[in-house]
Amino acid sequence: MNWMNNLKTVASAVKNANEIYQEINTRIQSTNILASSSNSNKCNNEIKIEKIQLTNFDRVDLQTGFSVYKARSSPICYHVVLVEGGLSVYRAPDQNAAEIIRDKLNRIRGVATEAARNQMLERLLQLYYEHPKWEEVHYASYLGLPSYLDFLCSTRDPLIVVNTTNIEDGRFPIHLAAEKNLLSTVKKLLGYGADFTKCDLDGRNVIHYAAKDSVSILTELSKRPDFNTALNKQDDHGLLPLHYACEAGNVETVFVLLKHSEGSLTSGGSVRNIIEFMSGLTQPLSSGQQK
Image (tube, rainbow, N blue to C red):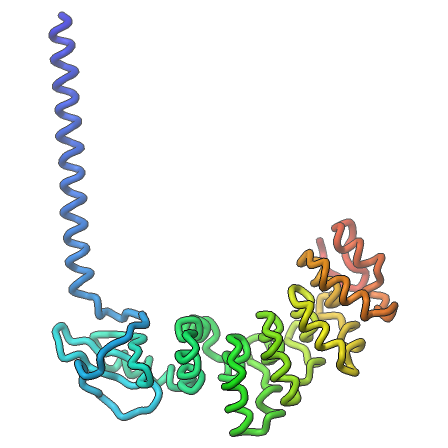
């Protein structure tokens, strides 16, 4: 009877092997089909930055900045190209779709050209898709493009440029630069007259943003006559810049803020209250927030 059991075992193993083979074969065929489909539709509304040879394309329009080019090869494919540098950033089989993207991107063509020169075009485009309502000054401040800030301030009133709020959350260019810890950009904005006491829609000023991570920016701001006023500003949640520094666990920024406060902190930001905030034992006395 042992031989019968062995035969059953072998038969079962063969059956399992056949099933496994069929499964693998099915998956391979499926993969080949998907790969073929992917190759045939590689122009289907694809967003990708790629250097192209413009001599292999026909230009559809004469717009500066971003322009639409049509590939001479099959299948039909329209590219949205940053003309300076010959960088294709979007491709689609439909000309209208490409032109819509071109028109949107041409709103930021100046800062896009500058970003491309600094190998930041991909970061800019990602930022644009996340924040399409920002102005060029906001993108330049967030990415740290001081030369483009110079250009913007040479074409318009610098005070208006550097104090332009964005309509999404009310942040100003200097808030964005401080958030990214870009000291040179912060200095540039201050030089053009940026008001560092201005607040976003949550009541936070630039010190709230710098308190999390930037000793150098806090030190620079501390030279300004309105520093103590901004230092004592509570946001709409009752939090001071010192709260944000504590929350971030940044000992250096906490030290700088305490050093420059010289006992001038308001009741909502007393040292005892902030220590309680750090320990999580109580909420800040003036915040009104629930833990």
